Length: 259
Ligand SMILES: [Zn+2]
Image (cartoon, rainbow, N blue to C red):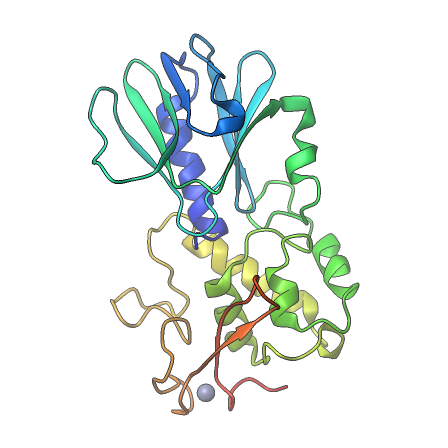
C-alpha cells in the first residue's frame, strides 16, 4: 500500500503533467460522477495530504483521490493507449499529457471550499508544509491504552504512515509495536524519526531506512519475516495488528524491541 512518501511523489508527477493546462478530456468512471465533464477547465494544482490527493481545477472544484491498497496514477503522452486489463477509474488529459488513475480507492468531485469534508478528520501531514509535531503527539497521547502500532497507522493522529514506516520506525526506536502509547517515554522522538524517514525517501522510488540502497539491504524488518535481525540475529517476526477487516501486517524483532 502506498505510504505518504509515494503519494507525495505522485502529486509531484501530476503537477508536472497537469498544472496550468486546460483539460481537453476528463473521464470519471465511477457511478457517482459518471456524467461529470471538466473539459476546458485549467488544472490549478495537485497537492497531497497524508495518503490523499487533491487536484484543484478552475471554477472552485477539487478532485479527491486515494490510492488505497493498489491504486496508482500513470502519466503518459496524450493519445497513447493504456495497456488493457487495468481498472481505470479516472482520466484527466490535456493537449500533451494524460493522467490515468488506475484502481483508485476513492474518486470524489467536490467544491474546493468543502475539502475539509474529505481530509478534515486527518491528523497533521508528516510531509506537509504545515506539519505540526506537537499536535500529532497530542493526538497520539489521547490514546494511552492503544498499542503504538495501531496508533501510528491511525491517520486521524498523524497522516502518512503505512505498514513499512510503522515497522521501521518502531524497530529503530527499540519499541515493540504492542506497547501501549501510555508506556512510551519519548513519543516526540519517535514521531520525529518517522518524519525523518519519510522525508529522506520522498524523492526516491524505493524505501530505504538502513541508509543502504543496495537491493535486499534497504530495510531493518519490513519484508524480512523469518530472516535474522540485522542487529541481534534473532528471527524477525511477522503478525497482524488491528481488528478485522482493518488488520495490517507488522514485522518486528522480539529481542531488539521491548514491550
Ligand atoms: Zn534484533
